[in-house]
Image 1 (cartoon, rainbow, N blue to C red):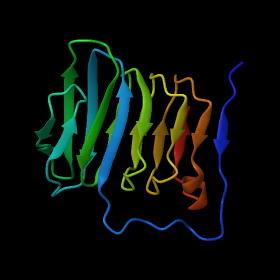
Image 2: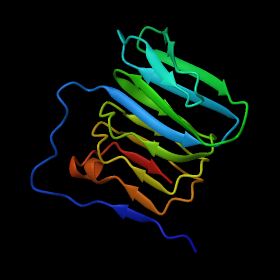
Image 3: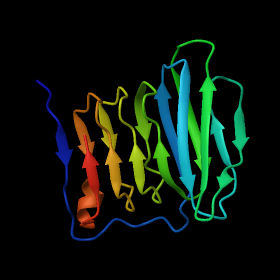
Length: 164
């Protein structure tokens, strides 16, 4: 039997929002291949990813359309030991990390995130309480026992879609 606890506590005062939103996403995986998709606002600079394999950070320049900047990147590991990936960049609005055998995902330093696709991983907890702009959350096929969407409910976002 799977139990899922959804935290939705509200307080009188909304949490303070960061003055300058800067994205810093961390995740842990044991996969031999990782595929990530990111979308950023126009005018966004590069994205830096430390793949956690001892080779240091790599800078990626996104592609641009008339309405956004995006980046799709694959990374291969020589072994399946645990790796902690850190992504740094500004104004990440969409993040796709499905099917990567993720065991941890920290999005707390990314308040501009509007869409998250993290299905088909090994996540047991997911906290999006700092993601005040979140509109869509796809987290199905994870062994989740805790999902914190309290900030989304606090702002009573009628457009939020949660699929678990």
